[in-house]
Amino acid sequence: MATAPNILMIMADQLAARYLGAYGHPVVRTPNIDALAARGVRFRSAYSNCPICAPSRASMWTGRLVSEIGTYDNGAELPANVPTTMHHLRRAGYEVVLAGKAHFIGPDQMHGFDRRLTPEIYPSDFSWTPDWSDGPVRNPGTAVDQLRDSGVCDWSLQLDYDEEVCFRSLEYLRDCARRKEEQRPFFLCASFTHPHEPYIISKEWWDLYEEGEIDSPTVSGGATDELHPFNQWLQYHHMVDEYPPTAESVNNSRRAYYGMVSYFDHQVGKLLRELERLGLDENTIVVVTSDHGEMLGEHGMWFKRTYFEGSVCVPLIFAGSDHVRSGVSVEEECSLVDLMPTFLDLAGLGSFGEVVDTLPGSSLREALSGGGMPKRAGVLSEYCSEGVVQPMRLAVSDRLKYVYVHEEEEQLFDLRSDPNELNNCIFDSSRAEQLKRLRELVHTDWNPGELREEILLSQRHRLWIKDSGVKSTWDVAPSFDTSTQYVRNKNAQITNQEMRVPRMEEDSQ
Image (cartoon, rainbow, N blue to C red; front, side, top):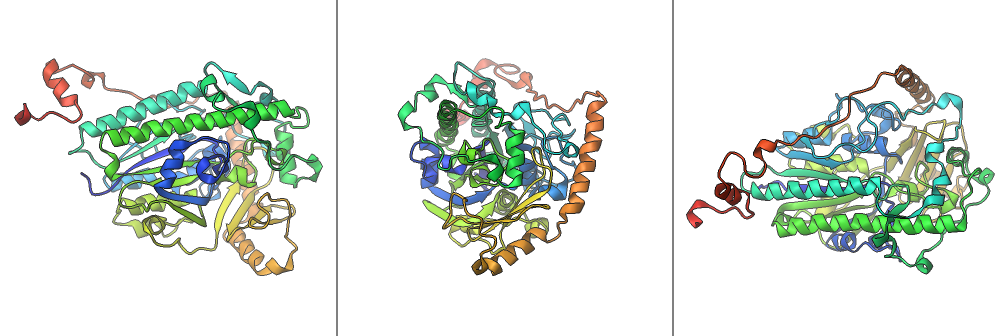
């Protein structure tokens, strides 16, 4: 057995921490994730570093904030010259494999992965580039009119995708078990698309919930003009004024989302049971997380992109092997950029310090093994993507949350006394010192005026390329060597013996 632990990272898409039983939700059924949290470490205040898909994942994999690497939006390229978690894990001797969504934009669709076991689900080119030069814009592609169709489906594109992700992940784990003695430690990311909208799920998961048990949003939506300007931009972008959700569509959307979460939990359970069945669980750390959250009607808002907790706070659970404590809940803030230094620390990378000294995140290894959390000023999240027209930064420290939107009113929320984020306490003199520290954290080495010009220039260049009509060839096409599958170059008896788990040795025959 390899000394360094295997790592199985299971990712959801658009899963808010609050919609898991392990994080206290009274309705949503997630028995597999709940059991994992009970035997591991659950971080209760884990933040996405950008509440939208591609930028969040680029930030997570590189350990850097989006303003540093230029991955502003869902149409922005992740540069190939930025080292990723995967590059460094390979340096540490790991086999690094992805099944599912990465949402890499640009010609490099690997960024250090040895193999990708499935195709990508979303475009890899510049087709989803926003244009801030037009000011706030309406977007039919992400409008809330889709809530009218929320409910039951016989099957869906997303079910197609996640069934393939799970199948290929299980297949890979079985191959690891076959090669157990000579197997390099593995890092497998199984990255699912549920519970991303549209809010539709098959009857099995819809029927898991009854009509009367679906709770309503805790904070109902008020008048749009009473929201902060950046949330007004998002409501306009999502066309809430044109398609105001009905009570029925809200209920159906929440019920379908709960079913989608339970479906994801079911896939988690399949992977965990296979790890155990194959005897791989003894030296494997399992991590469950998501790229960002989901508003699901809270404050009258939907999807992500905002800085309310539902959008930006994600689950983060570690469990398994001797490296992780059991049954621990950590309250202090962390974020997804902490994953890169944590994984490299767990992998025992010799040049660990040299790699991470310039990164904004910190290793969580001490917290996993029984120590405390790293000392820091707070955690940061940025948003420079579609739906808004100014760079934004969020800083959170000791449950105090500071929101800065360039050239707009500042916001400050005390999440202990005001968990629903209803009262902006920016002018509360008793919090002046804390506010000063959060402002310093947000503005250190960050110039929003210059950044806005860089974003506009990046968008303009990418839109020119998009409008030229040139078709990219950047899609990944996973390949499998059929010459080594099943019975090929050897007789059937020998091949069956070699492919059996556990493998039959000659002297045992």
